[in-house]
Length: 177
Image (tube, rainbow, N blue to C red):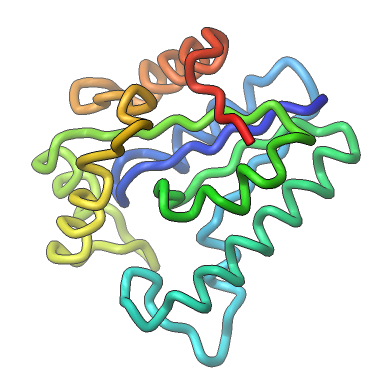
């Protein structure tokens, strides 16, 4: 059975950097899937995923990600998925969880750290203060999944990756179907 790590949190929380570290240092064959690439693949008709009118697009993208994870796991790979996968998008992942051992880890630095990190990025990454603040707020209360959050405000990427590895190894971050 393959291991799947859903590494999530608001934009600017360090997901991609940490996922790259975790996947690169894995003990077995491991794939790093960045959900941003699935969104960037939409060339015509793209809607910013944090907008209400993006709901259908986001559901299609999540289904594509779940299908891709399934192909890799059936091929014997572990998968680290990094992206904004809030509890509201876990349904399709949970439905597939019978085939995988799936951990859900939320990187959640404080708002000031999120804004500082988010605005320091360049290129095509999200840097808008209102969007960063809104996405941070979306992960502020995880309800029954609150124990899956790690405060990374004071951690650098290497220390965060170590905490993620420890969290996954503990088994406390597993999601059930």
